Length: 579
Image (cartoon, rainbow, N blue to C red; front, top):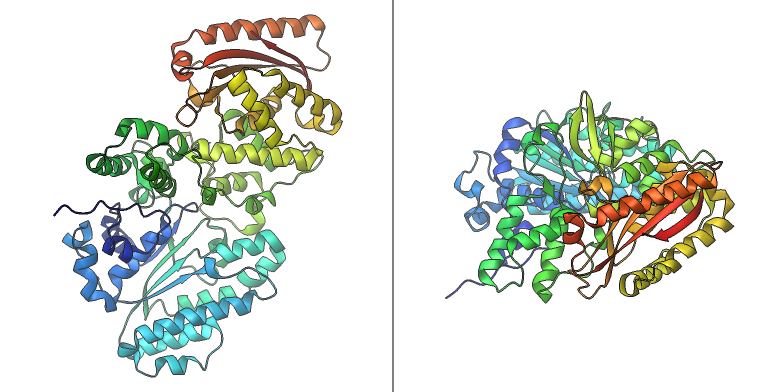
C-alpha cells in the first residue's frame, strides 16, 4: 500500500505530532550534537517566525527522560536517531515560552509568576514519579517564579536528577515593556531587584549543580545584555557559521521539499520555476560573515506558507506575504525619532530603501538605552531580519535588504514616517486603485497627478524629500506598495534597469497588459528651465536604451512596456512624461 503524501506543517511547533501525524520535516537533528559539544549554556538569536520554537520542541523531546519509549518512533528515521548522543533522554526538561506572558506593566509581575507556576506545576506532575508523589502539592506553598524554580531545583538535586532548561522568546515581554513603557519601567524588571533579573539569578545559582544545560532564544541580544550582571553564563552563538543553517531552510532543503511533492503529485510548475518564484521573496538571509560562501537561508515559515497554499490550489498564491511575518512596527517605530530634522534613524531607513544597503558593525550585545543610537539601530534591524549580511568591507559589514518581503515592510515603514513627520497622507488604497488603471489600461497619468496634487497641497513634506536620495526613496515607497507589480530598484536587479522597474506579477495576474520603466531625475530648487529640460531629455534617452535590453524584454513578459520620466525640482514634481 502506497504511503500517504506528507502534509505541510505550516504554523506547527509540535515536533512529536509532525512526525507522528505524517507531516514533512526538514531534518535539523544533526545540530543536537553540535550544540551539545560546544556549550552547556547556549544562547541563539533569530528573527521572528523562523522556526526557533519547533527546533526547541524537538530538543525537548530528544532530552526528556520521560520520552525514552518515544525515541525510535520520533527520531528513528532522522540523523540523530541513527547517531544518538550519550545525553539522549537524560534530563527533566523544563520549557518556558515567555511570549505567553502578557506585557501589561501593571499586572506583569503577577502574570509572569502565574504563567511560570502553571508550567512548573505541570512539570512537577510530569516528573512526580522521579521527584516524589507530593511534589506538586508542596510546590503550591510558593508564589513567585523564582521561589518555585528554586524549590524544584532543590528537589531534583536531592534525587540526583539534572534539568535541561529551555527558554523560548526569552526577551518577548521585556521588549514589549521597553516599547510600550520606556526605559525606566524596562529597567525596573531587568536591573537591581527586578523580578525577571531575580528569576534568572536563580537559574544561574543552580547552573553548577542541577540545571546542567540551558538553551535560550529570542529576537535580539538587548535584554540579555541588560541581565548579564545577574545572568552571565550563556554563550552567544548566533553569528557562528557552524549554526548559520540551524534555523530556517537553505536552498537545497527547499528543493528537496519541492521535489518530494513533485514526485508524488502532478504539479503545474517545475522545481526550478517554484524556486525562481520564491527566491526573491523569502531567500537571502546570512547570519555569519564566515558563511557568505554557503547557500543563503530562506525564511522557513514563508516557504511553508507558500507551499501550503500552492498545494491546496495548484497555483501561485495571490499574496506572497504571510500576514504573520510582518515585524511588529511598534517595536521599531519608537526608535524612529520623527522630528523637524527627520531623525537619524529615520534617515537610516531612508538610506536603506534608496540604496538597498548600509554598512555597520553588528553588535553582539548592547543595553536598551543604546538602541536609539544609529550604530545599534542598524544592529537591531539586522536581528529583526530587516537587514542581512551581504559582504564585508574592511572591519565593516555590508548590510542589505534580504528580499521583497522585507522591502515591502520597509516601504510601508517609510510611508508611516512621512505621515508622522509631515502629515502627508497619500492614501495607499487609492494609489492601488490608480495602479490598477496603469496595469490594465496603460493609464499612468492619474497616478502621478494624484501624487503631484497631494505634494503641492502639503508644503510641510518639502524638507523631507529634498535631495536626490530622498526623492528616490519617496517614489520607491509609494510605487512599492501595490498588488500588481514588484517595484525593483536599480540596485536590486543589477540588470541595467532604470531607477525603478515595475515588474508585473504575471504569475498571479497573467492578464496584466502593461509594465513600466521609471527614471527619476532631480534638480535643485533654483535650477533653470533649460536645466530641467535637459534632465527630462536625458531621462527619455536613457529609458529608450533600457527598453531595448534583453533583461527588460524578458522580465516584462507578455506586457507592453511604458517608459516614464519623472523630474523633481527640489521637493516639487515638475515633469512627468512618457518616453
